[in-house]
Image 1 (cartoon, rainbow, N blue to C red):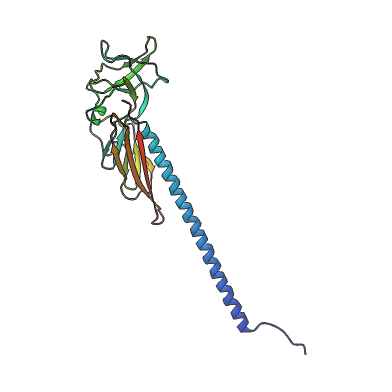
Image 2: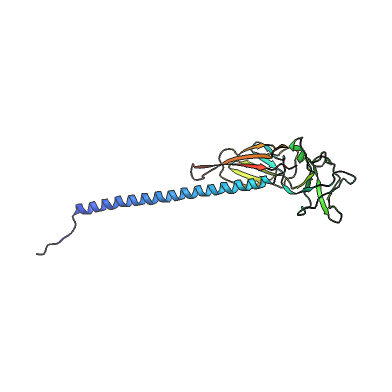
Length: 257
């Protein structure tokens, strides 16, 4: 009789056990590799978010009017510069007209003029409607039919000081950054207010999300010898875990009154 060959029950059990061990190791390896890739991707995404947010804040602050920075709690406010030139004469006989050196690019109407030296409070830069002070009434037009060209204001305005270098700035409406829970929001188009609003009217556009802890603003005002310096810091948190990415940036605001 011909003898038959095959596997014993013990051999089959051993093979099944070995295959189970190999499968378990393989699943763990794939799981850990996938988890590591996801963690690296999340870190890279937070790092990219940190770079984009800090660079956007820095670029806007570099165009802030010198000494217009105001900080209250977790809110930062400044006045953006739209254009600049040198004035020829400041004052009468026509207090609604300012002769200036021609702009490289004419500013939009509706913006305002600031002429500012040193002294006083940043709140003075936000005061409108009095007909006096460093901040003028809105610009009605730029009159290029005369030489030198003149800025035409909507109403008479008397500036309460001269710039050391006869500098004149055209500025837009204030901008604010305020923390709202885990969001950092950017507020604009809410107008000038003598006292800082916390936060300003409106919901604001989301500039950053997934914040943990407070956003910190630290400001060193400019002087005759140096520009102003603003430091800001915030921390981003992984929404699916506990990992955090701290962000810190320092911005120099040129002081050219």
